[in-house]
Image (cartoon, rainbow, N blue to C red):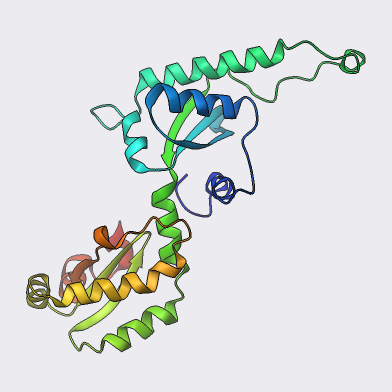
Length: 232
């Protein structure tokens, strides 16, 4: 799950909205992970990646839970991946061994929908992508209206990228000036009031909300006035 357009994000959003639920064995696996690791899994998405390898995407609500599943080198924790894969295999096997009712006895066996051989376990979090979606849902004309309303001649541009927003002033000197005065608090409150109606799941909190600040001078001189280089 990388952007709000990804299938697993859309599926998880439906779960958060109460429009979709997990079924066996995914719901049992989610409950086991929650209990075993004291976290909050809200969705588990099964699909395939390169070379037709099965993948199980464990989607937590918050980034703080996701980080518990990385090792000290910021790679996925192999031991936790292995434990989850083994538990999933166990749950799939239990389902396949369930007694068949009289009607199913007359039907041919249907292969399991889950391939567990060499399954890859991935981890992600819903909250950061939901914040990104909230920011991207603001119409550009409303961002421009806010810039006009602030009526600050030092402000060159308000630029958005994923969940972050940067207020660009014209010069590096202006960046230093605004970094050390009360004006940024006014700007942050104004942008917070703009984004909040698009924050469907109430993840954006006023006490922790902040804007980035930069200059057109830096953008022009160090990134060749190119947005691709700047956000790369």
